[in-house]
Image 1 (cartoon, rainbow, N blue to C red):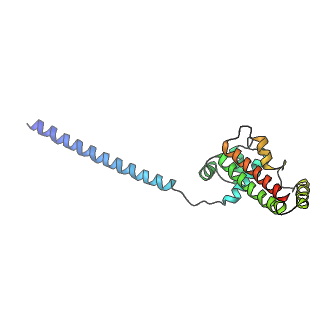
Image 2 (image 1 turned 180 degrees about the vertical axis):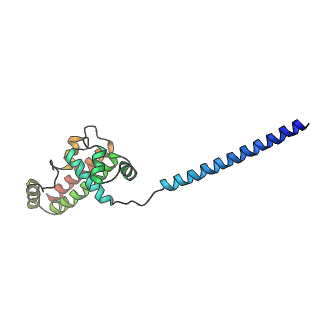
Image 3 (image 1 turned 60 degrees about the vertical axis):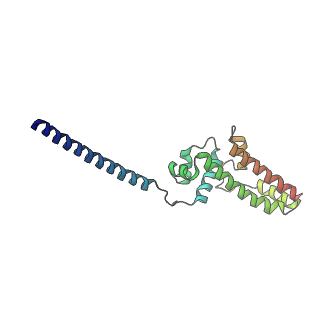
Length: 178
């Protein structure tokens, strides 16, 4: 009887210690999870998105989309790969933002010089396009959209949509000028 009682006490002690250990382990696990979640929670961006997109646009303009590795985009933008992915999804997301930026810049030029003008404005545009490039312009500083059409052989649907939108904007600008 004493042996059974002693085994029962040892069993209860063992169970109590095991439950206590398990509770401490779960509590520690939960604490670690909370720390991880706090670490991963979205922080305010510490960069100017327009500056990053402009830098990425120039990097892609210099090398072409296919030949621009993510490392070159890191160097050009000053962001780490994880920040690029968090902000833009992936390399193509950043490229799409760069194409949007280029489109908006070109739209201002085309609507300002062409759509509101006539043949003189069209001539002025082509004269400006034929002028020597700025010293800091990409080596092949032709139209980024034309470069994209030539560079992106198997373009995704979003890239094709950007190209189509750009062509449409050009057509509308020239049509309204004529």
